[in-house]
Length: 353
Image (cartoon, rainbow, N blue to C red; front, side):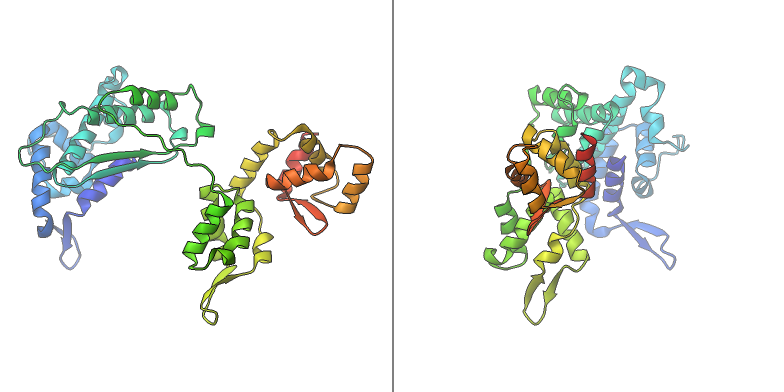
């Protein structure tokens, strides 16, 4: 679990490696006060067996402490705690959450606020979601663990992200979130991150490149067209063109420079391609019919051909339909040439015939 690695890395900061070979360990004296608070909390709320399990799950913690001599020092893995027979009745899950929460409470009592970030929850299985939810419920119960008298306990924030278009409305993830929202003592806030507008991308580029917005407006238009304003794809596209040295810093001009045409001919990313492919099914019927006709002519077509086809009334207002497809990012226009923004888009439209 990434959660275990995070806590283990946290305890690693209290260790100092000394000696020629770097194998001698001792506690960092500059952090002894904070660690004393954490250690006091751990030893106050776990027995010898639980402490041994914690040291096995968090190796850096085990290097700081000496495990009790009367406890079996056999290797303990997280699977042995979670996937035991007890887990069938929920005890294994509860025990794992107990150990996690003990560490969390201990860290907070040492004066450290805790922020946990979990990404792509839409891909989590029900067991992982239940572990996280059980953990949140445990944190929300202030009576489960009392605070120590000299505690300087700090806050706790859990940030979880998921793609709403890939999470079923009646699936276990959203059902669990709704259950948490109805629970007392747990403050749940949803934040929907939508697409960036062209003006917002321009504002970002203007700020990052330290240039007036008028200098970055055309670049922002290209970036928006290539990414459809998706924040992740926007950042990835900008990284890509910077790595390809399509954006460079000119010492002579003392500013960032780029060539709009070179950037405009760059292919869209696979992620944006998947997004645009989903949009195909949502297009008006006349637009989709126009794209089907164009896909039969290849990945690009001249305006003169479209005008001839328009006269034949294969599809009403083909040019107007293509203009709408341009706004959706399916098609782009360079002079008199209409072209699909990606060859695979042309193939996807052709497959709909």
